[in-house]
Image 1 (cartoon, rainbow, N blue to C red):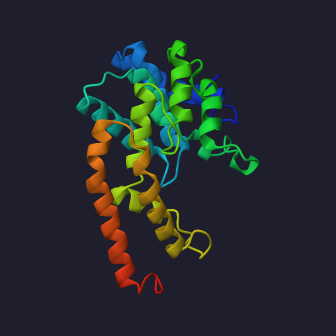
Image 2: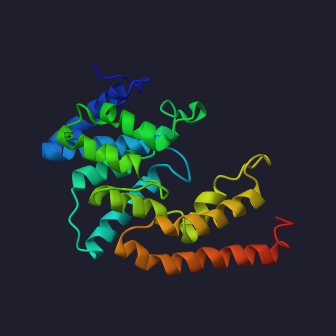
Length: 232
């Protein structure tokens, strides 16, 4: 039976999406192998709403990871990359978020991802590779394997350049709480120092100079135009 809205259990959420999606996909003659991707993409679009690490960030990570690997002539398992890219930040959102309990979102995401993918048609023999990619997607972690490496690098580059600025500024509390404007600039400066060192692939490293210059230039101009952030 199809539910009108998702419940707290991930299986029920995907079932609700599947009940809506399956007839139209069947009518279009879409092959079963592609079915799970549509479900995961819809799930991500419906539940991951945040300007810094929501659905659009997942789309960018998937597309950039694919492009970086192609530039390096590295073959990726696209099932693993797709699933991990669209679900890597799941534990940044309720009801999966356990940061207040001291559990990193990457670790929790890796733990719960099988419950998301089970029953969707995803080839579950590949689940451990998805776990590994999610667990190590942050720039300060050490990925192993091509899918984990290129997701990791795409995620790192998304903290730099103009998009990195947009993401951090989007986290500023409009009510004057934490982070405020100066704290956001501090976060950008920390990214400029910390993120590049974690980038692994040749293609991603080639993009670093431009992105670093872009971010450094923005910070410099902002400081100059706000009396070193005094009027920000």
